[in-house]
Length: 157
Length: 91
Image 1 (cartoon, rainbow over the protein chains, first blue to last red):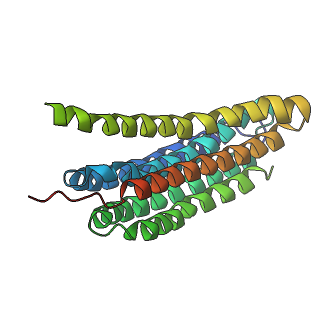
Image 2: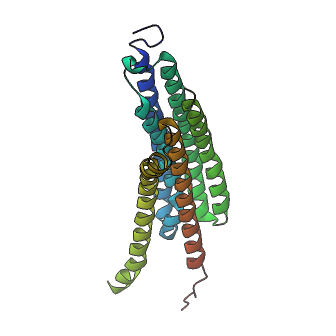
């Protein structure tokens, strides 16, 4: 135990791995629930559109997979301080986890709200579908940016 | 009710398609992450642990988006087919 690798160093890494999956799952759950209410309301009248309208739910699930990937990466390189796990590594891992976690939270919120309105609107006007997919992709990309930053941070050690 | 039975078949087909694609979207990226890591990057190319993890994460995310694109394509093309105007029955 030196000043470089103190006993509390892995705490930050563990918190990074946990926050990566926790906040991503929070965003994905909100996106699934919000767009799920829209699908449930819309399918009563237009059940043939269910296949199309599952797409926001799938995209919200992908947000959680981003968090899972980063959490697995961080958990793979966690170690005890005696095995040269420095405090710097802990900070890097905390930053990577927070980056993908909060980006996933934001993207999940966006997907939920857009999916709800888009699915209800697609039932009235099917040509809205292309627009809904585009907006969903731009919301999804927010989570992808967080993943890119997290992976870039993760490689700095 | 015969009419109801006749209407159930496409519903079941839709269910089958959705389940199939959902399983593909969930399982294939996770499998590709670990198989790319253990077989390709660690086994054949023998990269450092961190590099191989990052590359296999990139592979998993790319595979994820390819499967999502396949699902969107399928949903879009299917509904285009089924939305052809059906002959309206009039009394």
